[in-house]
Length: 495
Ligand code: NAP
Image (cartoon, rainbow, N blue to C red; front, side, top):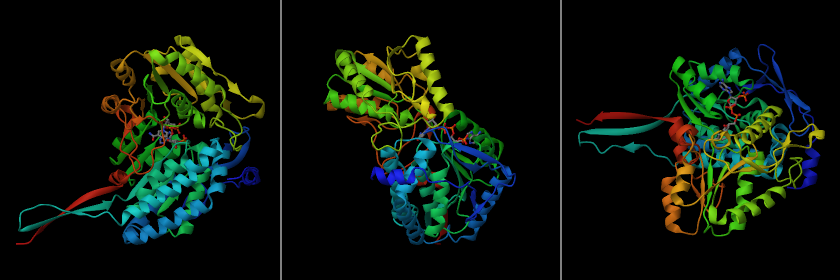
């Protein structure tokens, strides 16, 4: 990836966007439009369609008709594989265009976005495409005069509702296994990060996905998202986002057709550094990047750092130095370590958390302020508070921004107690050279993933999901198929 190629794309005009329904672009029936502001400079990039309930209904109907038609749902797995592999190739062929478009939309630094968005999405489509013709049904160990067959069937119409951080990566985690299993999908991106997923709709059609199998509807969460949640003909919702909206989706399900709801929610993930960490300098560097990349807008971000008292001062000195050295700025500049916060609203929320931490008595070590206000963009300094106690709001509430809460611990028991003093349970890390400590911590920390001597970086082969209020259901790995398929028993008399 070259800076000149990025710069050639950064000013490209973006046409007003439609809804992608039944293989075609269409406009919302109510004519509603929403401005898309770029977090780089706060200026209007383009507009997207503000879909109402009637547009959602059109998309769901198209998806249902496509499912019943069977041209995708009953296609041989090897056929679906071919189309999804082509889609992966197309995403990869357009990777830079997609990455720059996404960065202009949501502000993630390009060095991260390029890999984490189009390239990761292409890999995800490839993984599920390759998997689908290698998964077999089962024969039950029954008595001799019957044959018990266990089939795995697609559900029908799956709605995917995704957040604004990493829309392509997270979108692909849901759309790829759902499509590979034979479902039809209606995808609703977040208002502030819709552009790349609209383009995905177009690429899916180019790859040969039959009309109506994959639809993208944009609009406001409380309108477009709610209409999907309440729709009587949606069989399942795969959601990533906040706990508040997750709760609403469960209510919508209860009030409508009891559709399945799979929730990937927030986190307040503990990153635990023992005195015998293999390399404290490296641990400090990885810990800083583990919270501050993408301006902290990473669900698994290590937002609570727990450091053993005997190395606390040395470790913190290094961590603060690395943090102060991070370059926050234009997300389309390859040299930026962190780009812009996704929206003015999110920036205001982040700064509100800073004020709350100060009110609660935490000590500000660095950051805490907005940067580059003169650009009109939404930049924030990587921020570290220490002397954070479990009762403080900064220890309990997810910021989803570049704000790190640090506490010290004396021994393993205290580390476990602090780590688990949260309603969340998404991710965590342990830094130690002691194998027994590492294994004990893997068992003791309540989280969907425990990294050891690293932070982040898990690939598509392993599941991601939460314990506690971080949700349920798992994205990624072959386990994701459980969310998009149903088991059916055939009990056949041989007598
Ligand atoms: P959010 O506000 O919950 O929004 C997520 C999605 O839900 C968006 O598409 C949003 O649309 C939509 N939505 C909002 N209100 C809705 C409603 N009443 N009914 C149906 N849909 C509705 O979350 P966010 O601010 O975009 O994302 C940040 C959150 O996602 C954080 O908590 C983060 O930890 C979590 N996250 C979790 C994971 C994971 O894997 N566990 C990964 C990434 C992010 P609009 O944006 O258009 O309102």
